[in-house]
Length: 465
Ligand code: PFF
Image 1 (tube, rainbow, N blue to C red):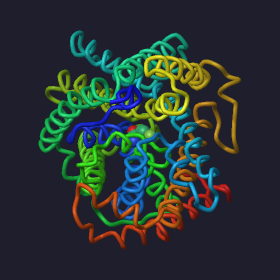
Image 2 (cartoon, rainbow, N blue to C red):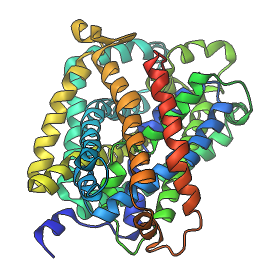
Image 3 (cartoon, rainbow, N blue to C red):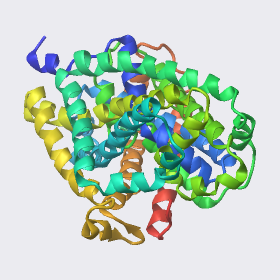
């Protein structure tokens, strides 16, 4: 085995599914999905989301894994290899660069939110030991505000999360990424199941289920948000799955792995929503108003109060925040790996050096975001249109522009430019005949690009989601 191959590594059979599911399952499922589902009145939004996962997310998921395993390269190299002799040639590798940029940008603010979950894990432990008083409950909103405005706190927890992420990526694909997800994912599943079973007993459970699955009205921006979120939640559009796909063994089935990841990701988003809504709906309607005015921060400003109103909340709440932190860690690892694998594959850097330098760069790029949430007025005023604050602007650029454009490029490249023979070979190797091939290609050629173009046009015309 050459040193290069040793540095790249390969996943074991279950390793890829766990690592890729670990990448997909994260703050997008536990923090973001429940609150955007709430803002869009649940029900139909959830249905559209499910359709988006199936018709747009799943085909692009398979496309990314196909590209990765075929080329055994991270995104820039992968497109350079596959685009040989194809119209556009080397220009396709811009998609790889866009992916590296997206990984860099997303990780810079994702790690800040992930840091909050660690902080709230500690706070819940403290409340569990010292008691959660009425004053603590009343001050949740303001204490979260002062936490955001405290630069030392923000930078420390951001640093903590980046150090953990860099540490795992430094250890490599098998010893670091695969082993970490092997340990964390089952723990996460067990904690989630305990919390879901616990929510059966909540007086809010029936209403939560009704809310999530009833058919109701949905706005155009709700549909767009569902489609846009399907990218973020499945880690698509930036080459994370190309990168992980490059470590997949040729004996594995890509369709099986890809669809399992989509299924698990969706299941976790629905479980997390059931848990959160069961807690929230257990509170009388009159007391819910403030919850939803701050829907984006429910996780920190409301949930602790509701946890501590439940029997066993002192145990459940720290466990819950720990779960969110684990879920976030298996996602931050993949974000960093996309950028790091470029330096290993294309620049010949050692893994440790690449992880350290890239991690430090991303940390620094995250500093203005961390300070824009309450500490620095100037950074809080940076704006694009109605979006104010460095953090918000960076998130907007990555989620509304970079990922959809990346997804558009990947679906067009795989649907129209990659030889059908190559795609079929990859999908069938380790799997056997793949009768859905024509459906997959149709979705990639027509449905995915049109849906994404629709989002882009909507955003260009000033629409927000
Ligand atoms: N899928 C992750 C989540 O839902 O939290 C976020 C993410 C990870 C996006 C990795 C993109 C990525 F490459």
